[in-house]
Image (cartoon, rainbow, N blue to C red):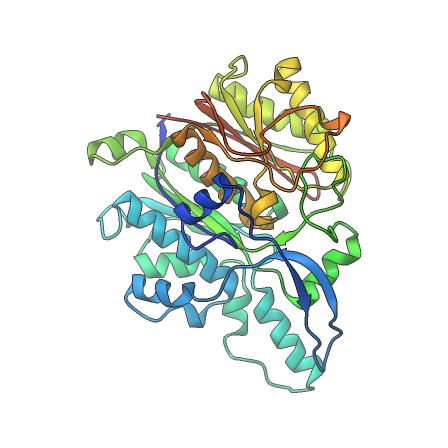
Length: 408
């Protein structure tokens, strides 16, 4: 089985359009969540005001400049937010233009819902304006594989290219799939991660109808937490067979050493600690770190009452009382919930935390909850001696993924 190196990272979110911008913001306790009013439309109701974490405009021009051609304008935002971090990860890895980027490289990205901005614009035109004609690029922009196709075409990648969808666990499943293909020798490299851009008027209304949205802000593990906050953006990791990376003298940013996946088979929205624990135990066992104490936990941490208490319970189930000593971060408090892109972004931030020896603080925290009795990183960034990162992702439908990365 091939070892799996991380040789490139890319990110975009409300915190900024690069890995460094995202890392500096979470490290310094700066957030990207702002109160947002969904405006009125002639064809739909507006006036909904909620906290959200949206990507600032302007990155599209930098993306086109980096690609050397206009490309962003022809894509739905979710695909643009996959292509931008893919470019950054490729550049950092030193693989852009390398002959390796042919049949021996995969592109696997995760998305929960895909091209909703394009879909809603088409529906508004068809149902609202009563126009029988839609934009001819509607289908290519909406399809879930638009992002991976854009990446493959931009960088001439001819290996396995596909998208996966498992709600909030999508990008973790994509990372695990790419890792498995490298481990088995099917490919040498894999661009993996995910993105999402669903802060559209209709989608926000749909999320509000679930009553999962916070009217205030995202407060993971705080006793007064009252729901999640939608974010948008994405993140991409370049995974590479360790031998391949070392042979070309690549800088190794970390190593993916374990992954676990499970299904609760229980409830469409309510989490199961037992299912979450199985994914974590699989990942830690594969990585051989079940008894280690130097683990930084990057929690799924949505800020919903049920999720955070369940995640606490599942951590204790896997690690026993040691779970209450492991440092825990929850960066959705800064960048919101990117749904399909969240886990990849949190993995990128977690790897930077290991590299810096510094755990970023959980933002917006007010008071301790006995049901979430963990070693939460609060106040300001804290020095850590952790050499391992446990990244959790738990999705609606009871779909769980845990990833374990090691520092180098």
